[in-house]
Length: 417
Ligand code: LLP
Figure (cartoon, protein in one colour):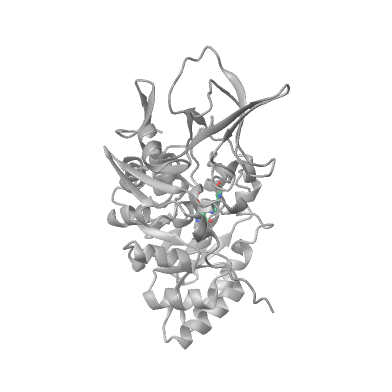
């Protein structure tokens, strides 16, 4: 969290006090650092040196169009999983020729639009999807460029909700069926097989399962070549973890370098789809304490952000650091559960945190740039929060706070007779 740091006991985002942002835009809100975002993207890009590659940022991690636009300006590619994400990337100025389309449930309309704008590649996840894609491409008089997503049956050793490379998971095509299927694809007139893809899970901190999946994919690619099927690229997905607490993920540089090493002397472009490693540490959730509720058993800091704003603690029991915006003395630290106003006991942002708190204080939940706002909802009829990006000493509002009117503007009463 290099770009969020204390100066004279006040927490800053780059050169701006978070307390000033709270005063101007109210709380809760997400605050991002442009420098952090760009530095992470460049770290991926620079590590490849001269190796042919595409960095296809996983839009699901944070899909605000200002963020997408900043990445598009760096010539980033994008990994999308829905029509909504496709339209966001286009609206942000992203190049369709650098888009890969993942996901197990692509609908007809989504495929038609992706063919129309000419995306780089569909990552296909099943034999039935191949058939649908071939039929639609034929109807549209197009040839769909595709990569086959392999399910290597490897345990990524991460939270089981975000592990995707096991046979039990809905993703990809079983490795043992891939070879035969590639030969089938060659017979499908409106598909062009250009790659193999694999993504075993997210928040990977131990890379040995990832290395195992590389070995398996490279073996498959070798067999394909021997059987006369030549590919353009190999897509190794996303998944590089970040440090939330005491995890020790490899650096972006080491991660990419180890990938490049494995592919040295092979004629393939490398595609990766990082999400979290680009945005997680580029953002915080800023919230204010409404009440301090002290009971005989426990102390609660009831803040104005809740599980609908940041779902990760409730959904994955995820731990994210919580820091006071104003650093007070640390002699009187008291354990608090940091909770929101939503009517569920799952509504917590952190448990048992040692802090010196007062009602009205501002807190930040750290490393909230990835899977924070993008997973937020209107649960309990709470308007989604504002998003702000700091660029040195400048502050830009990149998403206005929703109003209570917008909450139900799509709803209709039924007639009274
Ligand atoms: N590519 C594919 C095919 C994916 O399914 C994902 C993430 C990514 C790339 C990006 O992975 P990343 O580099 O961000 O790890 N909501 C969860 C994470 C879900 C990840 C889903 N897929 C969380 O908050 O931890």
